[in-house]
Length: 201
Image 1: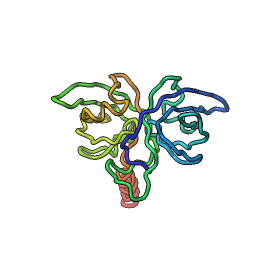
Image 2: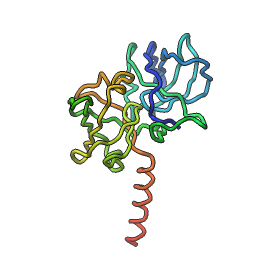
Image 3: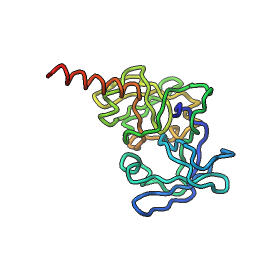
Image 4: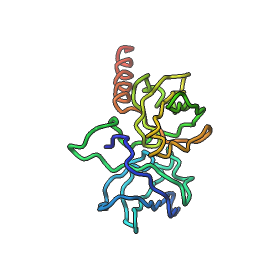
């Protein structure tokens, strides 16, 4: 479990592809990483499979590649990182599973006063659980849905701090991003769907 508060930016230093998966080596400022621990890489929960000098290695298997952009990552690519939430930590963002639902597309970027507004086309499963002032995770960053602009397009507002300490500061229209919908919304949507089905019988 994560909070969506990015604690570091890392950089891909090696990419290996075999048996339908992708191995990524990431340079990061973390110390005392443990083999087998979970870490969110651009919002996707991955397992530390090996230690490297100044960082760690992870593997993205085929099912992960089906719903993420990891298959297109190259050496030099920067990533948002967050270590798993420890019991007793502050929950400053929202409950993030690290289970990326799919890939969204940045439709527009514009500045409004001291904030930057992004319109993002999100997968249908995410659109169904996105409500104004609800939560959403983009590239591993906990954000608030500012508005639902059109069906399937949500708007988020980023403050200067977020733009500085995450990779979202470099995102432009047309870029593809990892998206995770709010887990509470997912459960409510699933339960509601089941209730509607029972009522129809």
